[in-house]
Length: 205
Image: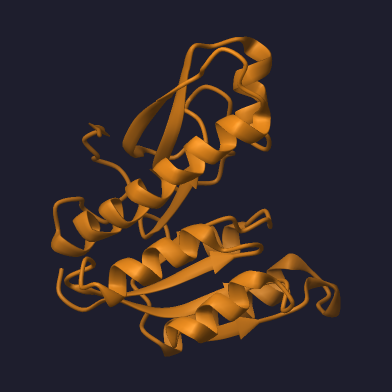
């Protein structure tokens, strides 16, 4: 899928954004270009990461809008202006409305720090530890109207070690995220994963 133009949505540190930016600079996203960072926190570290990578930004403050739908419509206009073909959620801490989800149905992906469908929502790493599982992991999936319910694209396991804390387990999970996310984006860009969000073969890395 030559010329796939990507927008990344992020709210915080931006480590997954950085992984994608590094992959783009190293020509590991062949067939895709990282065009835009969308961020709801203009002071977030991810904004500086985008500047360093030469990626344009769309920054906004949700409190300045009457509703979530209002700022999403403004974001959509920017995405359409730039001919964005894929939205990548990389630590974006806003719940999306149908305004955005419907417009990019089958063209929006998210990464989650657990093996979905187990431990969806906020705190997937803590949920896994509290439950006592011996294996957790990372999931990349298409975004639909539910909470981490979209079709799964790829998963990779991470062992839970004796004595793990939320912090130690998070370090290993985030390291895996930074490997898996660029790999999935490259497969989408190459056409190995179809952007329809319905017929997806689960890939275990």
